[in-house]
Image (cartoon, rainbow, N blue to C red):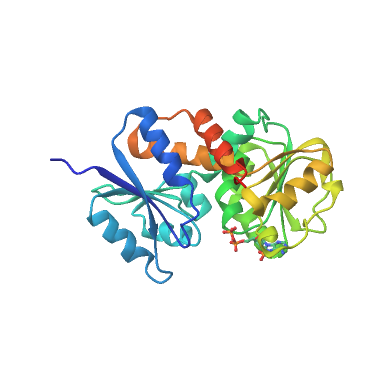
Length: 283
Ligand code: ATR
């Protein structure tokens, strides 16, 4: 009897993760036999936990907060986009050495350009934050050849180091790339992406309405209550607001393809996930 292939989302915490539902839906849709679990890793034992999983039938895992940088160091081989991001959200346990990739940026880009129907070519993009979330997506944003990407962060030095690490790609793509603090981020952006964790800390929206061009698209990489204040603000300014659920499903589809060689159809999975999340609790 052949053991079923195992996959997991590794993080701390992981109880809230929607990835098991998403991958179960992809597996059913594509007729693949696999199980997808939650792997809670002690903060000081990420590598040991993932190695034990690989030794007991694990074929790969997704990595979430706070282990994406550790996962990068654990991979024997990296995709160019994972190397550029310095972070890994997908590991495939290949016999010849673990392969590390980062599908977050591709997921965000697909959500913007395909799901929201907003091609980035020639547009002006403002990316808020310079932590792990922003590092994971900046390369993909640049690759879409917008006219400009500005990275704005509370600590300007972190924005500047993200700019520096991505400057060669921006030059190659003909994209103007700049860095600033939040106060000097400029105005009139077509697309505003929130990659900060400001709302988790209950902090106010970190930029003013002048940051937005008319009919701007505003995306928070989070979803659920954490994204609500930022998206409410965006709507109150007349912008189109999108949470991170589309990005979540799209990055998962990209990971599924890396593992299984099949590209699932994301639209029905996003639709049912949205319904599950929006469903009001019965009184
Ligand atoms: P993640 O992996 O989720 O990106 P992180 O690496 O800790 O987490 O990064 C958090 C980001 O949110 C950082 O850009 C942080 O700004 P600093 O680099 O200045 O710390 C940003 N952030 C967190 N709280 C914020 C707040 N109250 N206002 C503005 N930015 C905030």
